[in-house]
Image (cartoon, rainbow, N blue to C red; front, side, top):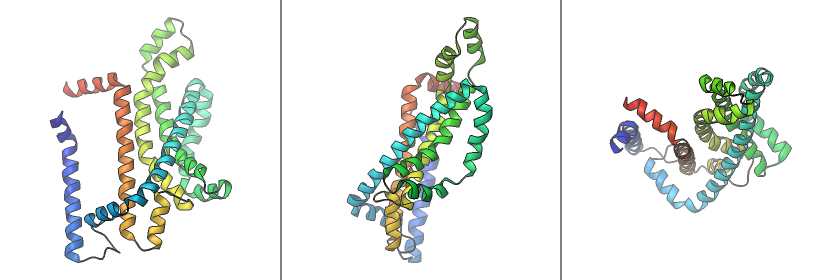
Length: 259
């Protein structure tokens, strides 16, 4: 297990440490001001010193992200199932769903501020918009790619469309659903921060904006570090839930790799 982990993540870890070391040396050797580019050690120190404030903003951003992802999961699953049940709706809605992604969501944030104010709702809505597409598309494709042999078997037993959906399509779509959810987990924190940039009382986005206005660049980098860690933690949490919920799928994947 340890050897597999080292083989999978060892090169990335070594590369990351090397880049951080070069960054530290570059800042120190070039005597670059922390107002321009703070060193990694200065960022960690600032994060520790200001953690009591940063943690409050972090929890607010995390709350917005989790609520937004929950909304995206509910409506993404509903839409995916609707597209699978009705072929007409798939032909009508799926192209529009793809076209909707050409609209920059960040451009909608000011409108949400005008319509709904700067409370929690608009930020949750922005996160939901960011996370909805990968979840809905991944789940819809997973439902459509169910094993035809199993479907034909159930049809020969006079199973209804709902029985086929429940017994074959939904279980078969779970790996695709979690793949989309992992992507959404990395988008969610970014969506919350974009929503906070437009207007908020708390959150990492407004904290970074206030830090820029006060020329505290090291605190901006500290907030960016927390943002990256939050995204990684959510990604890891989704992966862990997937392993617990789909042990049969990961067992099959491991067997294929070993063979």
